Amino acid sequence: MEPSKKLRRFIFILAAIKLIFPYLLQDSFYQPHRDEFLYLAEGNHLAWGYMEVPPLLSVFAWLTNLLGGHIFWIKLWPDLFSVFTFLLVANIIVSLGGKRFAILMGWLPFVIDGYLLLFFLFQPNFLDCFFWTLMAYGIIRFIQTGANKWLYVFGIAAGLGMMSKYSVAFYALSILAGLLLTSKRNIFLNKHFYFSALAGLLIFLPNLIWQYNHRFPVVTHMKELQEEQLQYNSSIGFIISQFMMNLPFVFTWIAGLLFVLFRKEGKPFRFIGWTYFVVIGLLIVLRGKDYYALGAYPVLFAFGAFYIESITEKLKWYRYALLIFGIALSLFALPLIMPLAKPIQLVKYYEKTGLNKTGAFVWEDHEHHPLTQDFADMIGWREMAQKASEVYYGLPKETRDKTMIYCRGYFSAGALNYYRNEFSLPEVYSDNASFLFWMPDKYNIKNLLLVGHRIPDKDDIVFQQFEKMTVKDSLSIPLFRETGMKFILFENGNDSLNTFIEKGIYKLKHQFIR
Image 1 (cartoon, rainbow, N blue to C red):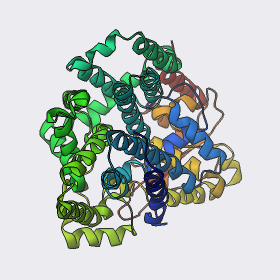
Image 2: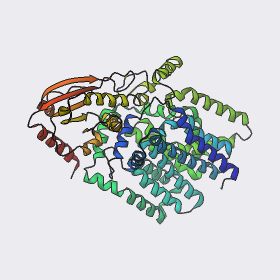
Image 3: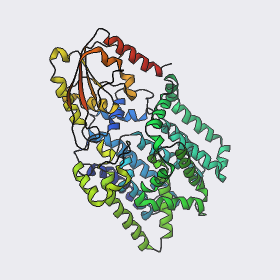
Image 4: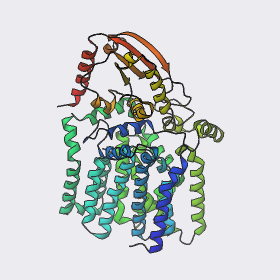
């Protein structure tokens, strides 16, 4: 069903509001998120793959860096894809016969619900969510029209999705399982389905080859995640989070699930219901983080919004009640989702409202903190770079000329490189995450300025090659996740120093080279 001009105009207005709205919400005090620094750095080292993720995000990082790297450009790409995802939701609603109320209900989760943060951070998750939705959209439109072109939309979306984040494979497999469990399994008799799958594989092939040539670093990355973070995830906690992440409009996606599973009109799309249960089951078994499943909900929002509209046609008061409930709860929780004010003001709000007693304040260290982890990861980085510059330029020139700045973590290396032009820093190195691939093979240094929380142990042989160690300064920023970071100068390396570094880096790199 084609939308009328008035309906198209309504969708366009909502999309425009969605595009502008996030820029009005972030307090200018905040800086890029710690993980955004890694992905922006990858834009300076374009490749077919990286230690953590496939390469598609790096293309947007390259464009961002080309345009100057300002926070506006960093946030533009996730914001644009939130609009694209909403347009897919709106088109599903219209194809079912939905009108303005349904489109409004499908739009609200993107504007004042948890998806506002998902599509605010420059991380692979925004691409992941979009391509999950696009894959489902392709199969839905094929079922509605019988046109084979929609199978190719599914295949291309799967291929591009796999070039964005590997968890796209979970949803693709779940869709196939969902189709097999319903009458729509005859899709597997269509030759175009296999051609579309081949198209997706060809799109993904360069990264697959890159992974093979680098001994599948994604496996190493996943093992580290399992050991450091995912092992603590519980099944009950994961399930509860699925409701909490979408709490203000939880009734919309539940209505969508009920519609496709039990309503006669939803029977052609029953595979979506099975897809949801399969992907949730996979993520529980694999101990995935709760937000990994966010891509499964936009399509359920579409069906749910249509269903709620259809059953409240003569109950307009019920519609108002749902809107008031969802909007009121969203506005109450909005300071949890977006950095609306400076950290200390947010902390006061959380304490006053009791929000600080929720699980949102338990970080990856399993400790309770006054500020959410994401917001604590958006402050302090510029100050860290400034402090590094002060320490570096406080050294005599003859010392400085032979000094390399080295960071323990990808986040600090990424931040210092992001601000390096502002503070006239040399290139900063790390052997953490993908930064390892960008370490030089040859060295000619006498001193090393280490940026890290702890002084190296005696068994860290490289640091034993220096004559002198001095803690030059440290960082103290309340509520910053990396507060306490030290700036440690190692001086007068011996004749074996550069050889030790070269051998160590060679060994680390060649774990990932065939």
